[in-house]
Length: 161
Image (cartoon, rainbow, N blue to C red; front, side, top):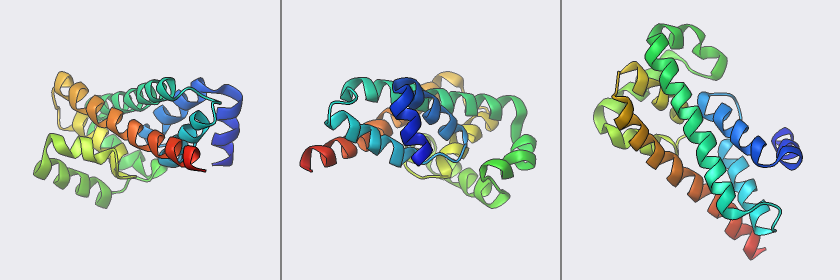
């Protein structure tokens, strides 16, 4: 987290965008903690609240779209072979698949709020060949709500302290 905090301090919105994109793809970045910190920075006027939400959404959405594309182009074999490098194992992939089959599109929206599932849900949407237009719509709703919730938590904690 210290790295992310320094990186955001030095590169601002570019860092937020890049770190969230990488985090949603599966890199070990504490996305929720980082967005809460971004909200706090907005509360003390270091960052702009609205711009922070837009940039965070852009990063999260970009990461999700890249993950979807990886899933669609490379498929399940790539995820099973190299997933261990980003914390993906057969058990976790199976859990995502069952969620996806049980809850459908809602699983993508709710998946943003579950660390470890968010990364796979985007990828599994591609693996399952979900239509790109439908994925973009549902994923953007989930990413936007996720960003607003965590940035707002940080913002209001900052206002109250």
